[in-house]
Amino acid sequence: MQFMPIQLPPGLERNGSPYDSTGRFWDMNLMRWQSGSARPVGGWVRKTGTPLADAVRRMHAWRKNQGELGTLIGTETKLYVDFANDWLDITPSGIVPPVNNLEGGYGTGPYGALAYGTPRPPGTSTAFAPLYASWSFANWGEDVLLLSSRDNRLFHYIGDTPDVDPVPMAEPPLSNAVGVTDERHVMLVGPVISGTYYPYRVCWGSRESLTDFDFASVTNSAGFLDLQCTSPLNYIVRVKEGMLLFTSTEVFLARYVGMPYVYGVEKLAEMPMFHPYSIAEFDFGKALWPSNRGMQIYAGGVAQTVQCPIFNDIRIDFSLTWGPTRAHSGANGNFPEVWTFWPSLNATECDRYAVFNYLENWWGWGYLSRSAVFPSGALRRPYMGSADGNIYEHENGWTNAGIPILGDRWLETGALGIGDGSAVVDVKQALLATNDRKQSVKMQFFGRYAPDGAERVFGPYTPRLDGYTDTRVNCREARVRYIGNIDELFEVGNLRLDVSVGGGR
Image (cartoon, rainbow, N blue to C red; front, side, top):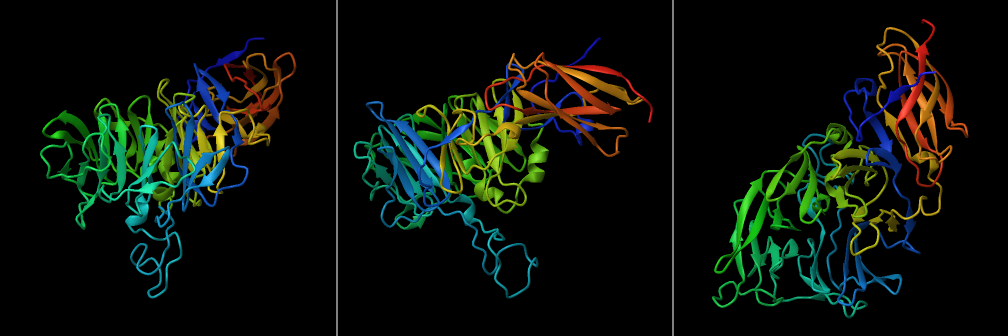
């Protein structure tokens, strides 16, 4: 008996249909590749005994001077801290939270789309402002600086008094976002100075100071620059070379140049982005974010489009109403991956994700409802939040907070290329490398007799204890789905098939 080897490279490739994507993987959920073999994505455990007040939108974790972990959680309306193994509400009094709900009303949505004189339902607004409501966090030693872009005041959270609400600061200008540079300058974008809003301005306080924003002084290092932007500055991301400054359509790099100018700013590219939460920092000073032109990456002082073979399918599936307000990204940390979440066409919250492995250079995706993500590093494992107010520690165990996942982990190929299409073939037996974990993976085959004919389903088939899988597949071309059969670590390696010419049809 001679078996036909089937060996596919890591990553999804989607060209038209599964039968146009010969020799590649086509679809997947909660799976990843490591060193060429497919393995399950880890499970998660719930970190909230009682859900928080509303949807988790932003997370920030850091280590204090004595190594103690600090974790802040920003929801739609509240700010929480992990205090004494519980989530304590430390929302500053009077703050306007960064709610991202589209409220509808009169005069919203595409012109002529709905009846004149009737209020629009929620979710039809295309107003500019809701797209960029966000929490912004930046480490200041063992403390944290933060603000809400709806409120614009800068707050100081003191690590030594973790149960005390953040303190509003009177001296810094109001702004859209905050960052702290390597040179210890507090940097703000879109400031309000003396009652005037400067949407295209980036400014910074004097070095090591939270109070000195005297831009007229010649004895400090505070300063500002007005940029040539096509839309207002709204977010800051720290990278290896300096600070990335984002508008909704452009990206700039602010570099330290020394006195007397302190910082210089250069425009890197015109790259539209969605919500600021969709910008993920990874791999020591790089950044990745989705746009309507493709997946964008910043590395080494250059911003450019990164090849993504599944981007067109992401764009087709992306909700144009809720996607810009809900899309978010974050590094995994335990694995060299960046995860990007978005709402599918009929969803109001993120229910899909794409994953980019930046060391092995493959793309995958899956189906998971998460509203925020923060990488491991300060945390032992990555955290993810959900729209129902729960927080989960991921890559922990193999279940969904104690609920079996089993068949929800799967990997599906395109056409296997087992024949040239001129004859019907039989697949009688399969051998799948699974790292000695017996019966860990079931196989389900799909086949067609004609390119546009109906697809037949065969199986699923469970391997015998000796490793052989008996199958009864009859078609001109086939593809296969591997289905996780255990909530443990397993591997999906090379596949070999016993293929013979079958009866005509």
